[in-house]
Amino acid sequence: MTPRWPLHLGAGLGVLGATWYALRYPAVQRGDVRAGDAVRRFGTRSLDAAVTHTTDLGSVYSVIGVASVMAATGRHRTAADVLGVGLTAWNVAQLSKTRVRRQRPFEADGVRRLIRKPTGSSFPSGHAAVGVAMFTMLADRAITLPARRVLQAIGAYVALSRIYVGVHYPTDVIGGAGMGVAIGAVWRGPLASVNARIVNWLYRQARRGWRR
Image (cartoon, rainbow, N blue to C red; front, side, top):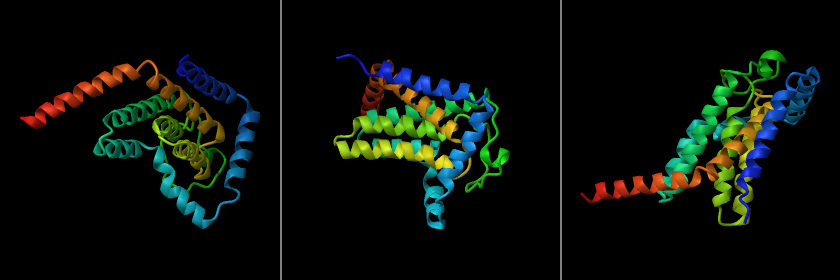
């Protein structure tokens, strides 16, 4: 069976590259504003509160929390994968922000901001990269199809929520999502066997320590 990760890697890099290239066109900026306004148009106080309190599902804190739960329930390989892919996505996104200087919607277009002021460039969205990378990988490990779809939906929700709270444009989260897909593909492909060996070695060392 042909590995799927090269296709996912190509698709993710293609999306990331296309959105980055599109930023040079003023028409894209205007379309970003209109699309973002459309996302926020149906906001209510209840929805504002719900999204504000859940948008950080794509943060480093979420990565650490999910990894801790996986480790505590005996799923050490998944815990290591969550921690590895999540932190990699976050750091790659932060590095990319230093190469792309783009103002955020609340700075450039007066868009309402529902959360504290973030730092760094608007492109790409680190939360979208982390959310997509982490939750799509968890979806691959899900036992049932409904669970898989729910996890995939959470990854998409994280990206959409960043538009809703006013800190990213649609192209920012699409680019971040593409980055997350690419990083997740590499993690599940070339790095999978390496990571498995490292986790197994650490687990054996830990068990030896417990027996002493």
